[in-house]
Image 1 (cartoon, rainbow, N blue to C red):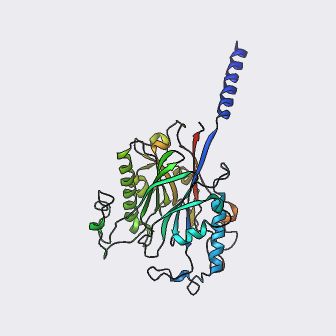
Image 2: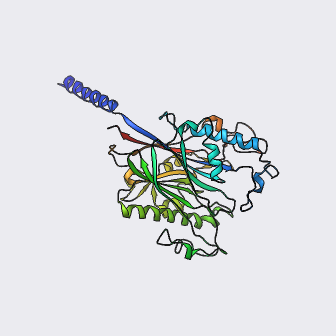
Image 3: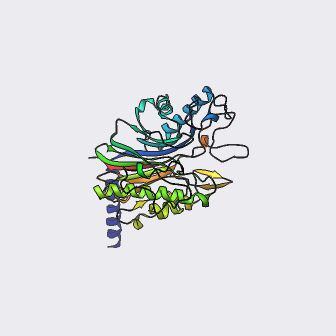
Length: 364
């Protein structure tokens, strides 16, 4: 009888494994990458980009610019390919000067065949750096997009009276004299294959002046992010939203844990809540950037609860990762082990590692 029970259990296990293996899935990679100062070589009189010119402090020449484009395109072509042979379907990006640099990027040999489209708005950032979304036209069809300003001011509380209830009506609230100009939050809605998803691309206020002194600005960014998601869920309670970007805060900071309300464990995510798979990585000491030999994960991709339900008949989150291949890492000098960034002598990759998630769905 024991032998029969053992055989029966093993048979069930084998059948279950075979059934699981027989299922086929559609996989899409969603990535985010801070390009670290992707400037062209032309001086824009309306922004503070003087150092990123041939005569500027960075000696930013045509040769360096072209090498930077090649470097970035190599990375974009390889993100997530350990589990998905296709390059990322959706790529959120930050620290780009204008649409022109993205047009140059998507023409690079490594990625030109993926036929990326661009969604980009100029932001009010004083350095002239923006966020944008690249998407493979074959798989993603945008239906609407908008840039939502983050309204924060010097010497004013930012969490209580930050942004209009109506996200599209902000002109009356803009106080130019006291405003802290930072990147807008980019909201893109579209169809991934035949399924509607919403993407928010972020580059939250920096830690200039110190982490503590600037924390309220990022908390305001988290609150605006939460408001955008709330507006989507009011229209459709099951709205599938992904928010990603360089948040200039780690998964444990108030901007993410409290203002946005992200949770690290799927079972703890409430209805209409947000799941952050990168908090668990941070607990293990992993990072996307380093400062004074301390690693943190500023680059994160989070999603609404509708992406973590156990039914794979529609797109769901599978797993997340940090793309930190050896060629992206400094091999010598003071910053050995850090991301291989730009220097005065060479165009590197970035001072951040890119991050990615896989979305999967059972094939019909």
